[in-house]
Image: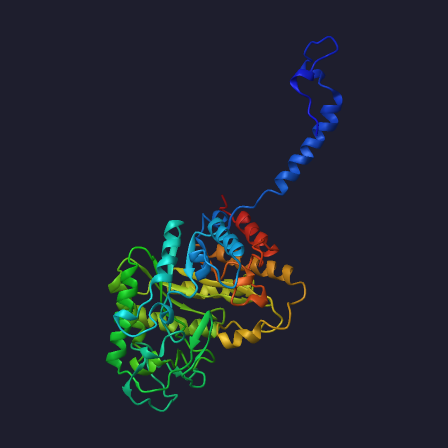
Length: 443
């Protein structure tokens, strides 16, 4: 648009015009156009980052994969990875390694020489160089643990459903929730995993020593750098209230105190680290009560559990304010900080009733196309979920998305995140930002 230059801003006699007599067309016409253009620019201005929008409330993080941590290839192109890294740096101030700190990848072979720290070191370096809070995931888990960890010379006993009791807890039964036995590698939730090992087993003392050595080595290596650890992951059973603990090999060989031992060893390795218990499906009231039973038992034993990790793998048909508000209200009764550790909301037609994190089941639950009007429903679900986070901001101390965008999500066919496969913000992103803006103490 042409603007009058100073040298053209004169009257017919070469004298400067006085302000009260500025050209009427400029005042009433072109000035109005200027206002409209300026308004359009403001309307299309880039929205704030997630980390800035919630800076008054909690860190906002994401899980990153090896390609993003190392700026290397993979199934995404170099250009796509570069864009993903830029997205991580702009929007997040906390990172979790999607796979590279799990036992299978960081300690694939037995003994002190069996570690592979290169990918995990790259992940930690990425977090430090970008001034992000770093979460270590995970130290003890029934999945993605190499068979050698459980192997020994003791015959494997016949599987039973016998009730076992947690120390200082009232009759906590153990569920036999393991899949059929297999020695071969299977498909883990976040990458290749191992099925149930059914060969000769280690003794309790042998497995405790392996656990201690592993935790002391890994946590010790990153002491002062990794601020938060998922110490024990998914030890609770699914199903009804009669069974509390999953019947994993950790439980079968060591006993219920494998959980307290893991926290003890992690605290020894880094007394300043925040140690979490992490699990999925805590939107289910039955599973929430199992968690409360477990954590109260650990608290009575003075076990150093410092935070609760609720994964929040949700579904668009049920996710929202009411569901999350109920869950957080119950979790807050434990008096511990709550970390939302693996947030995503499945929009696929299949699997809308489940909140599990089992990998084999996930393949089926992200099929069948997207639910009708998926973008709007996803935006509504995220808006309500973050509204609940903000309501409980005195308890919620961290929110982490499980993946950077839809294309790299473990639930990719369910389009579960707030950025699409091209790293563009979806309506759900704007809905989340709007919740931050409308919070009572928004900056």
